[in-house]
Length: 225
Image 1: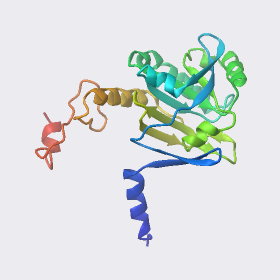
Image 2: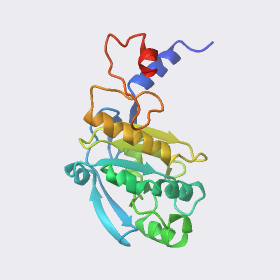
Image 3: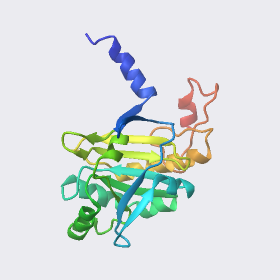
Image 4: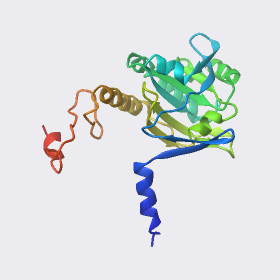
């Protein structure tokens, strides 16, 4: 028999999802629906072929969405397929006001060398952030202290700096960038229409829902319209 506390734990995890990580000597908690503290990071910019310095606040000032796309390591196997897949949708995301930043615990020098060597990365145009101490991965709760690398974590931050989306995969399963694009279309639509919600598998142009007492127990009628 399952412990009584387990259902309560599941309920809490679903409705009050929290990511806890140690940032230096203090404990930082990132919670969906709450603002993310500012952080700085170094990147390799594959378009300009140079190293750069950026911060979350920089993008918030520009009223941009941010996707932080954590992956385990350069010169591995699933990782280049993920970044190549994501690169296919980079221009569409840019037109939506979305900044994509891939992140791993490798150095920016490793990013540069990997981009030069791996043909799958020829189409990558987004910033590749370096997190050699793992502090950023710890902040978002995806740092594997034993392996010293990040899990496959995707985090979506809106133009107000609020964490609105998260997904974490284990090492052996790659993500689907087409699904990420679909979700970003939903997030950006709802940002301009906060009174509405998008149902499962919603695609741009499809009907949305406006929660009200009229909708209770009758969602099927509105979906069928």
